[in-house]
Length: 370
Image 1 (spheres, helix red, strand yellow):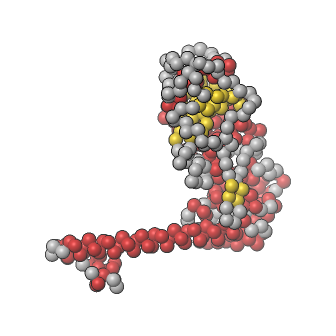
Image 2 (cartoon, rainbow, N blue to C red):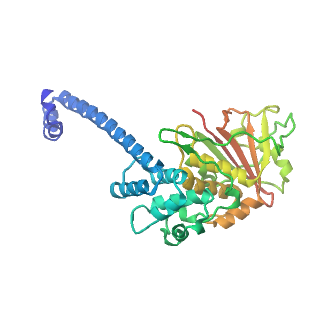
Image 3 (cartoon, rainbow, N blue to C red):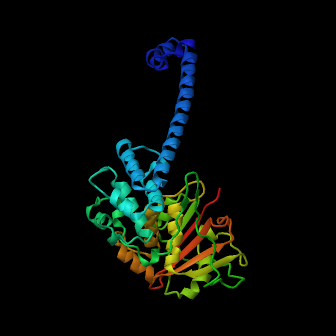
């Protein structure tokens, strides 16, 4: 098929149908083979360009100073490159980690320029809020909530850091590497492990989670692209004291405790809601194995959404309503030796939330293995 070497595209449009009609379908197959080879080569070249662009953006983002900021913003505004390494949420996270707040406020939040970078600004604003920046000390940051696009997904989030968000984890990045990890393992304090042997009788309670509630509860885990997760909601027959929850959980009809024997490990601790939020935030923002999550701004959003589903906040509730319900709920962190939990360190956990009236128990189980 020597004639296909010089003008492959022309042959596709001018000769393929004719050769097929003449019965020379082998010619058409060979034409397709050459196209597939060229496509694979071009796709690999495109991936290499994306890697190179991501590194250029990373170098500019990690180089302190207003000059590097201005060059980066001009490049992003003019060229609007694509690929994971140049996503606004990722670039914003790099900037928040490596630049002075005064430089970011004066440069990134100057809306007279870079008019197509509002998504970057929205992400960077919440990166800074979570890092404890005093927004009121920087006029461009203070005015951002007044001028930001109202329909942006992050507009629902509070413009100040709430008490339960005060102790969170961020990744550490350099020019050629990064370090991050989800806080794992149960704490030694506030343990409520039920005595063994436990009853092997399963509870008659049934999961009543609607699709919307289920999606809300697992939001942080799915955003972090973990391996698997499950969510359940049980309406209890009567009020259940927090002290009764550790014995109840292993008996519930949930995949995460299927096969748990009367003496198999089931460990549980009662936890402050801030520790639960920290775990959900790390899950979403830093992601599971083989990915880097959705970074802090969107990690914040999805952590709040999971908290809302677990605490039973109504659909469309404000941050203030979600926070109020979360603070009034009782929170548990648990682990178990079952087939569903693979029990790799830092890659599995269970969360349970008992409502303020002690009649609703919501559960989230997550695991991530390779």
